[in-house]
Image 1 (tube, rainbow, N blue to C red):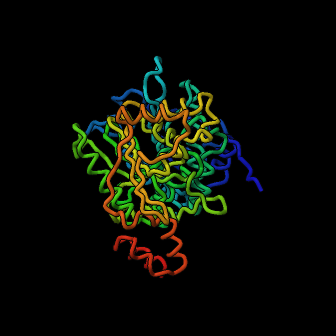
Image 2: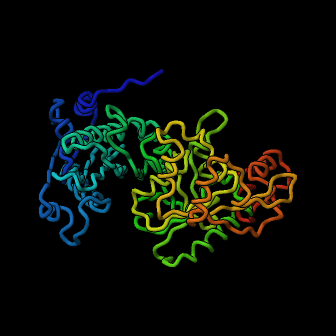
Image 3: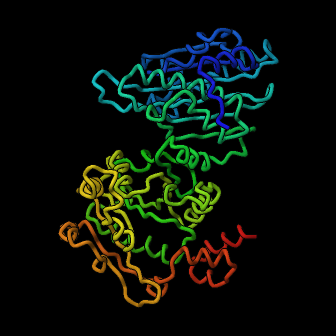
Length: 463
């Protein structure tokens, strides 16, 4: 049964009248709309202890950052706002309102300027009690604003702020429902939630990595990243103006061949003339679109297991909802990447030249390749061996429709396609799906194809 979508004004009214939540609203920059909903709904005296609106940067600094100036629209600024507002509310009101559950809501937002030349985004957060006198919980969001009008962006922030407060009050025990409720009364073409974190005594059970995967699964963002330690990061923070090497796979499981792909592609990557450790990033990418379960759904726990395994061999990880490579390259273009290298296998290279994948584009394969092959991109092709054969297949071995041979020759001649060497020829005929089948069938042979650290994790999971 489809859930009822509660209108924004009714959400605000229910909070005002039906809950013991009482607190502060602090909004700086372009996001001045959330508190207004609670006043317009009626009964605001039941919820609103204080509102503060800072538009001039000097007032923002005076209130929240007088010791250490920094970015105004940032997670650190939001945390300072929540710290100050929550501490003030609880210090002033705890004795006077012992039956209340205190909260502080804050946002710091940059909407479109007059020339529409800036990056529109914001940070929203709430710090709140779920028990009288209890320690607070905190939820933080980063939002990318997509509308081409500042007033519409302000409206989006207002609705999203109400949704966040309502979700914190009603759905802190269900992160999936929490995320879905953030979309109430908002169409997905208005915004993206690119980051979400939850913490606190009643939120200790939440795995923030699962939240990231849920954001992608629910189409609230197109991609999320996890660093080598497994911590959730925004792609923009990790990728901006970097040299990037990305390896797409299902990593189910990570085999010696996959580890060799990582090793050989890095070796070639490091030969680029402007390669530097501090300006280059390697990561493994998985697409939710390509890894649906048999039931057509995404097993988030399975994904977390793969992320753990990749982290165990020192890899950063990206999860996306892009099925096609040109969509992935389009994503990277947003981050002003310097050099981009994608690692794919010979079968995937052949698939790139199959025109059936581009029937949804007016320009067909030519339009797709215009997006797939910007001047800063190279494809690294890892060889393979088909089962029952000893022939090593490389980029020179692929079979193409004759009418596409000229296009392929152009890409090869101009250095867009580079072959990798393999150090694992003896295992190239064994595919990861076959190793996964061995694991499912309890066939001990699987251990021959999997690194020791990964094998131990698989055994522990099975036990």
